[in-house]
Image: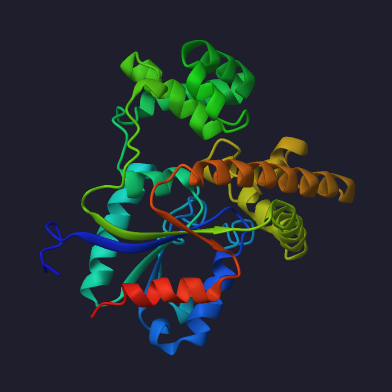
Length: 320
């Protein structure tokens, strides 16, 4: 490969699937059973929540042992008071994939954040850059008026985007309105690339699982997170000054605590309701992920327990 990073083609294996499908589990099995692969893979996280420090349990962040066994990138990158947009992710991911290839290893981009994966695989949409002033004003309105008026405004100026964005997805509602206010054009009117970038050489693997089984796994995962100390993790974040308008709290598994009850401590009855809402929101999110992933081109679909299939793909990607 050309040692000039700016000129090098970007090579990677991309592994994605809905939340709780079993991405970590199948990868651990494959690497444990094939020593040749175990030392040849570096993981680039495509999870917009694992970026944040202090948000470990609710994001199903890799354990210390997992992080030591295989090099991971874009995890614990910054504080949850700061956003990490798709442009930042794509630039970081491109650079990391090139550097990993130059080390003679396989860059494995894995996660479930749809707009990160879309940006990396197909390129960035031609939207105007973020305006801190406009974003601050919209965030103030969301805080003081609630999200409903902003969503109604989005439905009026950009109904196509409103249909695609979840009714409680504060980040994307604010961003779509921001694009309209900055450019005078609906977010949906900007070209959204659909083909794989010409400077990418990628093998794309999607994991799938029966929906009823996936829902059961989601319910079990949420229950396990609560038992592992998620309420305490959220309480610590709140006491450190993190608020519901900060990027870290705009995510499933954290925002529900403040939506249902406000500040800690939470009663057992409140924790039960919080757990139910997290599970419900996660199931809905997984469904949106599945719909999005089916639109991506050149995907090789595997059952989530098909270790042999994933092993073959990774072996094919090994550098000569």
